[in-house]
Amino acid sequence: MANNVTYDHTIDKRQVRNAFGRAAGSYDRAAILQREVCDRMLSRLEYIKYTPNVVLDAGSGTGYGTRKLVMRYPAARVMALDIVPAMHLQARPEVSWWKQLLSIGGSQHGNRTSYVCGDMEQLPLKDSCAGLVWSNLALQWCNDVKQTFAEVHRVLQTDGLFMFSTFGPDTLKELRQAFRGADDYSHVNRFTDMHDIGDMLVHNGFATPVMDMEYITLTYDDVISVMRDLKAIGAHNVTQGRRHGLTGKTTWQKAINHYEMARTSGKLPATFEVVYGHAWKPQPRMTTVVTPELRRQLGLA
Image (cartoon, rainbow, N blue to C red; front, top):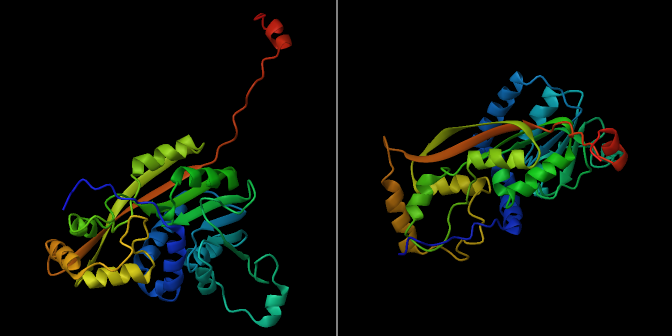
């Protein structure tokens, strides 16, 4: 097989909705990593002395992070945004019919959480509406991270905080290596480098960005278990360059054989490079218009 293949890593958003919609019911049972990263993000908030009035959980999924944010900021209004309606159905609490009649604008009566269906790359929200934009392991499903950052900057209030996690390029490196050379299709999504993410934050007007990363490795008995977990959280391949039919037995067996070479202490590793970041929306810069009169006063005429 040729090794100089250029894969189309464009995320198919329709497939994202379908994949996560099918996985909504099984998501919480398999989303161990997502919950762990969320908890680690929450611990980082301990060092940031800031209390927002409105919180946006962008890519809220089944609501684990949303519920944590509601508890952390009891006086704040929380908006949970996700591209998959079925995720909101899992996240929303059971509400009696008479309370549903009293719900306004997506908020449950007596609950400060609103549920919004939308895409992070085109947020259906007004300018400067949130004091904190929080996003746990959702940015990797965006095709244009620069556009997403521009949207986050737009909806943030001045002096507001953007805090997020996402996956870096070494994520699922064992799976990517196993399929490399097996066929001419992409099998793993493309992930953005931490330093490029930091540059994009600055380019979109954010101030004092802080970036760091860590590796988290899950272990499995076999390759099927790896793929089953990825499917259970809707995180299997949804790129345009994926194979649109079933992977053949020969290709699949070749990939399994390659993956087996990574077995250590009886287990197969699945590595995730987790990138953490936060940045602030600064006060707008003051600009001075030099009129002809001012030029004369300054002796510049």
